[in-house]
Length: 225
Image (cartoon, rainbow, N blue to C red; front, side, top):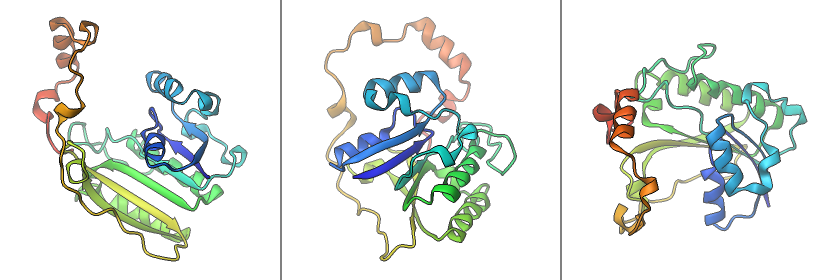
């Protein structure tokens, strides 16, 4: 059984992926502050409801059980094309700079495996120096990192957005390889319910309110972040 700690957990798609892959795991802890995300997590994984450590900035990692695998898909808002691109520099106070909070967890717990997922802009010219600095820190701790820009449609999922995945392994005995691409055989229609209750539809007023609150919606809808 692999022991896992997820940060910026959301509803924990990482754990759902492990379950789908048939990997036996225990979630020793997770870190999330968004109320809606916490509610969703507790519905999907009620057995781990009491293991949320909350704000990553306030975690005393010395009091966290040991774990083998850390996931850290830190906030993308400040490096995404659809955001203001305030960056992720250390000490900048942006949401995306919360990435550096994970350094404390890695330094103290030294899990065998680390996995990052974020938007493609992380490895753009504008932000690559910060990503490179992060990988350099991991290297100093003994991790070898492998990263790749991956698109869901290249791996059997009808999703066109590109994402950066970085896998880091502590003192690996052999090289890591990402899964080869597979043929896309499904469309979004295959995943859509045939009949959906009207309660799940937006009213015209709700749509108007959403667009007013999200001025980038039309400009970036469908864009590669």
